[in-house]
Image (cartoon, rainbow, N blue to C red; front, side):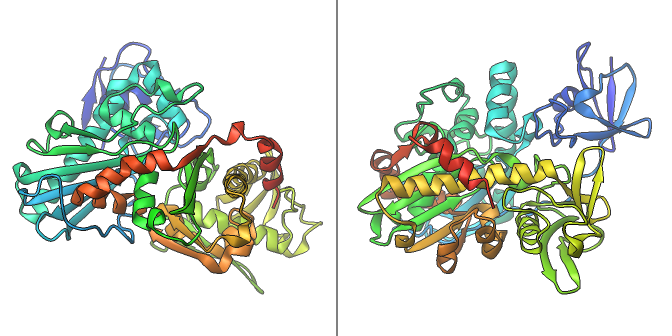
Length: 499
């Protein structure tokens, strides 16, 4: 039974009873399937006989031709501040090194000059594992359901392609690579290494990578046949080496300033402290803030609404690349939530008001079969369920910040600076984040962005044996806070879901 995908022309023979989504995975395609194929997100749309269908809900049939819509160019945060370290790589004789950040959503790779430490070239791509779900829970479930090899092969293949491309761009031979440092959250690291994430599926969620490791890169990355693979350890089951990278890049372990680092992604990871003590936690923010679980949500790509603001004449917005909006990404989503709150279109409990209750926003407030919604423009709208998703995500982040401060016995007002890491942190408007309570409003004037701090930390590990050593030491120094086990977490979380 053969199925053909257009416009790529790829053909595959899936087993009897397979869905189009499963056939796409077999064909090496990487469709967006945030819900992992459960049929709930509605984002794996393809066209069969000119009709849009969900790939995960459509069974294959002999001779079928499926048209896959083109994906827009996504905005990937490749660079970040920090990352400086004394040049002393594990392989000092090598001409080139590489630093990698494997995120749940994206993969970023830097090619480094072995003599100066300079970044020669940088590349990023969406993580192809997104075909199995948007968040780590979906990936863990997929791995345990028999897709472990496919998940591992997908990320290794993408990383190898990125690294090979960087070598060509810089005129480097793959054999000249000395060290390749890799950071990521625990699930991403384990899937890359081919180690089962079963430890992350049930308590006590103990980390597998508790010590730094040096491995032959050829066993994992085809484009690095002679390199040493440097794997930084994890702090806790859901607090990974990417957080270690953020700490290194921000210099928390060397500073007296009380600093909060917030890396908001599909799995929000945060650290609070300084050289006198640090605590870290992972907040189950879910994929809402990256648009995956929002009805009109999308990643930051051409066609996404990325900014929303309120003027006297009404609601205004901008679209990445210009033109008509196709959806809304995370930064636009937070802006829109702040606008809804400012205009009175939602109350503090997150309930959308009717046109009669909020005349100013009357043209945007409508109802359909799913209930009340706020229509921004055309088909781009926010439903009551979407607002609940935002509340749950921001409640988890805000509760994590409060409980970390409580564990260190400090008040929020005592925090000297807030560093926002990752792509979301780079594009979010801090005023909107504080307005809805995602970040503490009292810290508004202390918020800075630091870009892809995890990648910056990975560069330090690739270029400095001391930074690599510190990565393991930090895992012993930082206290991992498991939020669900903290007394009063449920009440704290519920309180922070309110605007």
